[in-house]
Length: 320
Ligand SMILES: NC(=O)c1ccc[n+]([C@@H]2O[C@H](COP(=O)([O-])OP(=O)(O)OC[C@H]3O[C@@H](n4cnc5c(N)ncnc54)[C@H](OP(=O)(O)O)[C@@H]3O)[C@@H](O)[C@H]2O)c1
Image 1: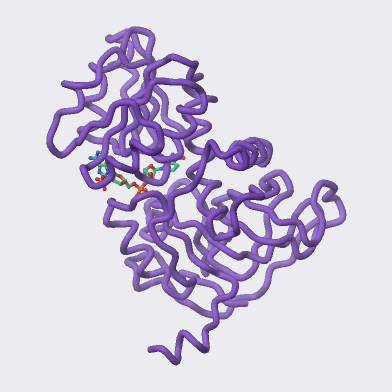
Image 2 (image 1 turned 180 degrees about the horizontal axis):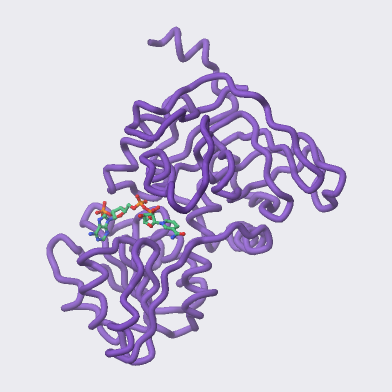
């Protein structure tokens, strides 16, 4: 099969479009023909070696932990899925990923994809959607009527967080540069802050939940916006427990987990019309390098997705 693999850590140039062996599912696993693979910042962080202390990856490694596709084969202990099912998944990021024609995923990590989305759009949902879900609902226990500040509201995680918080009935404050304000308005944001012109802490106050997708100075300046008993959930950097204690608030660092059951709930919300992925652009699998360069610019609107199936390589080559 064709895949994008890395043989060592490094810059975008280490991404190689090449032949790789097609994996075989074990007893509790499913082989999926990948149609679309979502691109996330974790992909280039792994490529650069940022995660090597935590995840014992072996080379060559297939990147990409976000996908939608069709079940090709199931292991003998798999009971909930069968050949031909249209599924989506956040696979285990310690194993080979989805920048490939086929991937093997555990049964517990997949769900039927939203019926209302074709595979390319569905592939944008699992990783960022589950992250937003687990941050807002599992970790922060967001309640209707609460005030939530979402940093980076137009990004991969942020745009799902805005819509899920809206679905929950929360009051949403989100930061983004001016070019993304119309989008944030459409997604249901109540108060939009242009972080390039205003200090968000001068505008956002009495917040129950801060979702920190940025870290650094943004995290540091987020403490005073929280009301007593509120919570700061970071995706990027451990917040200070000492600071939280001083202020009478809570703090957590989230590491998103695969979860097929939550993906099934998310699919229902998508099909109800209350949640949709925003696609910044779609690129062929062979252009994973360009996708990484764009993602590393830190100004993606929504998601980038790699088209894995129906990409006619011969046509592509003729055009060049
Ligand atoms: N811990 C976990 O399990 C987990 C899971 C998912 C993601 N993450 C991490 O969370 C971070 C965000 O992920 P993502 O997929 O949402 O990234 P992303 O899609 O690349 O985020 C891009 C967005 O960030 C916004 N942005 C950039 N600088 C900003 C600032 N100073 N203030 C406010 N917004 C800013 C940009 O908006 P403008 O263009 O308008 O500036 C853009 O829309 C990444 O570091 C990722 O690795 C962690």
